Image (cartoon, rainbow, N blue to C red):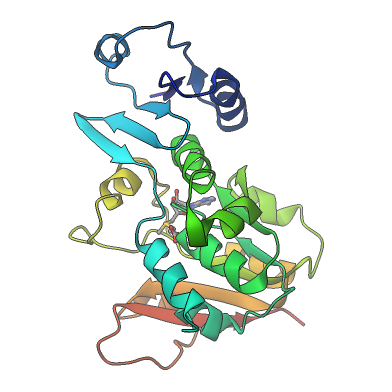
Length: 253
Ligand SMILES: C[S@@+](CC[C@H](N)C(=O)[O-])C[C@H]1O[C@@H](n2cnc3c(N)ncnc32)[C@H](O)[C@@H]1O
């Protein structure tokens, strides 16, 4: 169902039109109506409401606040000098170019933008998630503001998009497909579950990512690493208590 994007009284209708055009949503002028009136008229479609400093997505009787979620804590830790697992596993350093081919809510892309201090391109196939994440990245405070501006949200299916890229066009490609099982924590996880592309990563796409990467592809998987095994990627060593398994697939020669 096509999502609607509208504004709160403090929001900018031009931003609603921009997000609708970029991500395939329908912009709906607020026209001084109560939110309940808009929600009653959209037949259950998700409604993204843009205010000046916050954005909320209303869907299935719930409200999801656009925020960096857990990534905010990761950024706070990074500011204190702690090294995030994706930075360690991918060896990210300032100046590296990163393509996050599974942007989702933008957490990994934000951490990568903070570590590299440069632009990160994030691909997301679902327009509602892409618009929600773009709205969130624009509204981050303190530690998130600079990296939030450095993430370029692109509405695209990575399978087709990767095929069009030249060899070695990014230092590192990140791939974090929807491996998680129900029961995963985090208030925003249901939003991902409702909208995300759930197809497993296929071997051909991984090969394309390895071709597009100059150094390699960092994959995330559930702790048991079954998807990594299926794809023939060796899991990186991790603590026994780790909830995520990482795999590194070197760039194709
Ligand atoms: C587990 S989430 C990624 C979470 C992300 N790493 C973060 O930190 O928020 C996976 C995301 O990848 C997206 N996705 C899955 N397959 C895709 C594809 N073929 N092209 C683009 N995006 C895809 C899903 O829609 C979902 O939003």
